[in-house]
Image (cartoon, rainbow, N blue to C red; front, side, top):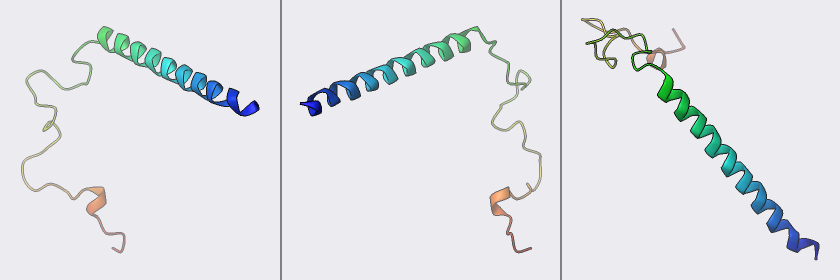
Length: 69
């Protein structure tokens, strides 16, 4: 008989976790809505994807540098 109550307890735990996750998402969405749009530090009129790129050859990324050198 003890086996019958186990699925109910685990289901309740799953439901509580789902509800907590929903509340966290709602809080993040509310925070995002109140935050100003240009809070990322990129000036207006500059594409944020290419803001850090300089003309000319680019230095190699960290994952491209060999550790043997």
